[in-house]
Length: 297
Length: 246
Image (cartoon, rainbow over all chains, first blue to last red):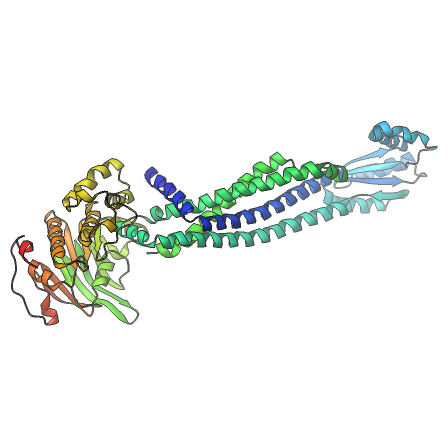
């Protein structure tokens, strides 16, 4: 068994080299496909990260109370809310406490708040929902209360983010499937050339009693080699680009969306595995398809 | 050994062979003769399971070939050596490598290869050409390499499809002598041929096929009868004939 794999690998290297123009062409095809896949992957992973973070941060509903609403009324609302399904936590935040929070948040710039003659912040209720989906029901409940000035929550924003991410995932899937098919066809044609060049040898091997797997071995390894080369090349390019991008705009993204981009190391490791798996499968499928006609005895 | 039982194979409306029943025993030397398109190739292809029979049963060493799965075909072929009219050697491999290749395919160790290949090359008489490439050899020498390759794994049957078709008469007889030697070592030989003189002078069993049917099966026959050729009664004895006869 070991013997025949050694034989297959030796033959495969020879074939890739002898047939280098076509081998390079298939590598280009797979690499191009993996590059596009890589870009989609980066986008989807990052959008997912943003929406996951958003989901966590935006599970809060802020209910601003009118100044005329008393603490007792607010407490009444709280106890009703706590009994509502989907509410994880509901607290009363007085305007002083809110101001104190602002001061902490602003840090060194907090002195700016000193200029305010009177506290402009309203008293509020801060409600955390256990599931973002429950937010609508909770809000509907809050709307039935008297003494509410305004309600702020971010379900719409999160919904939108999720929709974008879903859309990206689906369109990436469609494009990738299409590209995978194209790559398989290109690889199988490349390998068909080597197969044709060795048709006679294959027929002799069959007469002598070689098993189909013995005959297929070198071609299979050839396809896999092409796949491995392409995936390493494209993983290299995509990772390099991603490092550059995070270096350039990572900070801005953090400021704008208050979430960092997916770290490059994490992404690279995953990319290499995904690319290798895809590259190898494309190469292997391509070679098996190209051999079909020659082996169905 | 090889037993056809009411075997029929047709290609669309063309008949390959029709209702053929025949038995070839271990150690026999059999000529398969007949005009082109008579069904000789079909006969061979059925034994090698290159094609499937429409009807009937074909047994090889007790194995029912018609029921073999594709995965089992290699096992069958390892028991049948085959030699072609056009030699079919691998041009980029030396004589030694061509023969060794047949052993590699069946996963023999390189030690066994180093031992067995020279022995077989010496048996077929081309030891001195082991490191030559096929294009450096004469046609007869190439056919010897092909025979060496066919027998190196000790098949029980050697199938020779017009092995002398591309050779001049002298060389053809040398190859026949070799095949007879191999047969004497116990290997069954089934040879398809158009070479009337060879068939006539060897005096071996002759199966004649015409239009897909066996029309004659003589234990010690000649080529000509089925095609109305003149009959040659000259039958050499033993192994003397090849040195004088052209």
